[in-house]
Amino acid sequence: GSKFLAVPAHGILNARLAWDPPNGSWEVAVSATNLANKRYFYDMFNLAAFGFGTVTGNPAPPREFFLTIRKNF
Image (cartoon, one colour):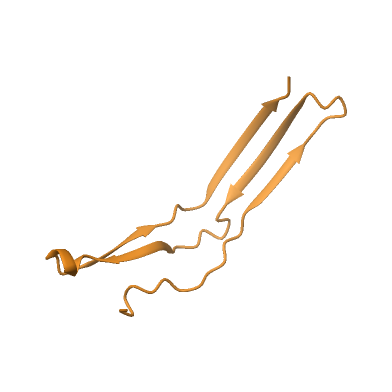
């Protein structure tokens, strides 16, 4: 294994806050992933075995925010 292929250990901070009204027929939630906006790779891959002299990686997404509204039937 190459030191360039190792993905360092990391922690990611995600959060979700939901409100479920007393009647319970719906829910609204706000959430966020990667709150610290940490840059890291999911994985690394050595393309030298295929004739390319490079290492490539799949970057993780940056900080993202979500609003979810759910109706229960």
